[in-house]
Image 1 (spheres, helix red, strand yellow):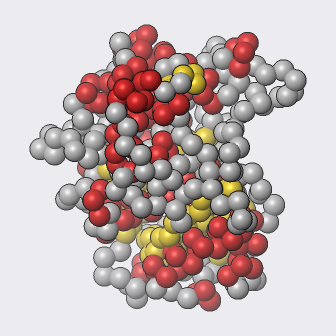
Image 2 (image 1 turned 120 degrees about the vertical axis):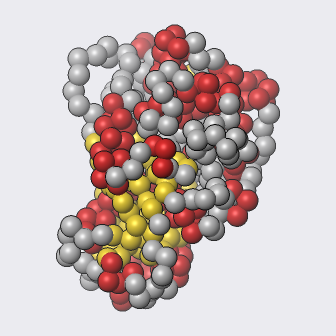
Length: 384
């Protein structure tokens, strides 16, 4: 296996673009990534494209938009981990030695469509949320938060503070879908979607695209003296365990992927400068503090209280690890296929020192995490 490096990244501002197409959105991100890498269209040898809602030949359509055809294209769909899985395919294409330069793109045009599971995954005449509480993603992650509250005494205010934090972080990210500062009262007083998650504790849907150019060691030397290495790439699915059908497991995949990634990279949680994790709901972010081993079991709420995942938190504390400096899914947005690559864009900018007002000091390693119930989870660790 050869070492693989990120040569360039590109991301469009997340939002809603009804006048665009999936291909045109993806093409914009690809052009930005190629410009960032300083490479030419004709240098790209393969492409992996992630898209969930319109999977048919998306990669080929993107390449037609930018005038590059004939190369191998992989079209990927893997729940919310779609973009990150496309990145992983491009990673292995280079790591295997088959290609010197590969391109990964994630794109989605959702508008105001609901998240996965909006109809219960079955007969639309029978919506299971009203019966079991698990027919939609809000129901699943609301129940997961309630279980954490039951076991560890976590409060709704602690979950809500995560939304306050992520919206504050987004103020420093010009590519975030929303730039709205919220108080704790704003979050708690917004309408309840699935307790304990209120409206501002749920990610918005929208449109977006992000791309990354990957190279092997020999090629990257031609473009930069400060390469960003993909030190780990882990993909897991949910192992079968007998469990109550009303409470899907959102933890095991992430814990397994984190263990694999830390071992691959030769690093531990204490070495990570910041994390872009899958905060589709505020409850999910707090649980993933523990799943990614940033916080001990049951202490996610205390980490929130002590601002240990906040950019404005106690930098002198060894436990301090800013989470979702981009604004996270809660404010940056969550166009499903784009999210996994967008997370890697943010970590790359942090490693380069290009994150502006949201820059984490003394940055040497970062983690990007995405989970898709269905099931798939990816964790990538990037280092200088």
